[in-house]
Image (cartoon, rainbow, N blue to C red; front, side, top):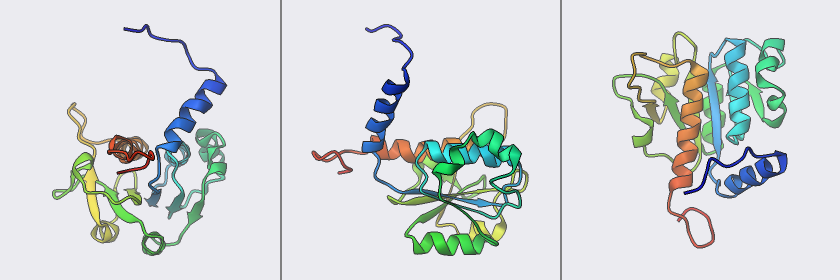
Length: 186
């Protein structure tokens, strides 16, 4: 058994993250359906950059350049392809045209745990407003709806926290999938 190890320096971190990037081939996108809180938007931008989100569409009225968004995003927004769209229908059309499966992250009576969903190689996670969630029209247009199972005494998560769990779950499933001898998914 090895000890706790030592904290990684900048070069070691780059090597570690490069190793995981090599094991990542699926495309990941986000559709933000009415996320309004600038701190949530900034957190989601930072998460998107960290998990390799290739495209994000947002109907938010708060701008990515808002100082509160920038404070939380910590510059990671410059690493993203981020499009403001007028309607979630526009975002869905662009995501579908790009070949993404649209997966809502929402608590509904027919949603399945995220880990149980059949996911395509290319997934666009759809997250909604902080209080109201995903709009009814967007929810009906999703290809699948999943949720993050909770076992504590809290009934739901903040939208940025739920987005973090969902992004991680999509990537985790890809990383845990059987690999071919060439290193890609089998």
